[in-house]
Amino acid sequence: MASTELVPAGSLMARLVDAAAEDWRAYVEHEFVRQLGQGHLPEACFRHYLGQDYLFLIHFARAYALAVFKSDSLAEMRQAAAIVTGLLDVEMRLHVEFCAGWGLTEAEMEALPEATATMAYTRYVLEKGLAGDILDLYAALAPCVVGYGVIATGLAAAGVAADNPYRAWIGMYAGDEYRELATAAVAQLDRLGEARLTELRFPELARTFAQATRLEAAFWQMGLGLET
Image 1 (cartoon, helix red, strand yellow):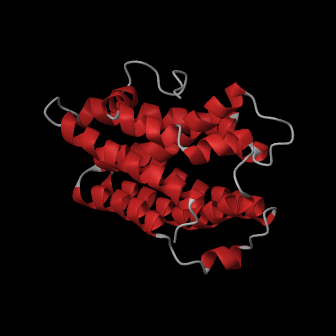
Image 2: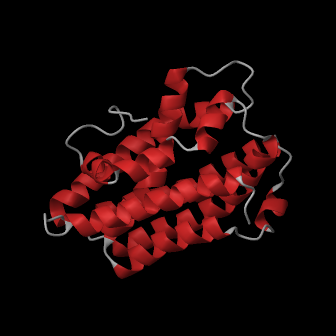
């Protein structure tokens, strides 16, 4: 599953996806994703995923706060700060409202212990950002930010039945608002790459992206297997 609309040929994101082709395919075509698109995913698996995704978003906000610190310009700082604000004030609220429809309260989700897969990916992103620069950080974030758009766009294009219980989730990530966010993330990677990327550095950046992609696939598996 791929979306040339969200990942245009020649972009740094496209190069990273190509370099991690097998890992990327395992992520965007994971069994969790397939069952989600078909409407066959057990509800317990989806609720488990939603609860962990709430905790995941908290750490994602921390990662973008780190991007403010790692930025070289005021424009980059403002962009990262705007994402932090969006995550804390908009995305978290929308997520809580969505989860309420699945019988999950914010207090319940906040009290959940983090699953191993949740800790693995979020801490990896933060570690890469702390040890490297802002390009390393955004490369580690990209599989999630862009990948969700690619996955949902692919599911929507394949057709989603009217009675699919996950239709709203797919529509949210395939919608125009999220498409703009994913497109902006691809463009930001290109801008950072123009300023910071060399051909000698690309293999290491590709390894970061590939590892983050594998950790995203593990997050799907966590939901599918009800793993803690």
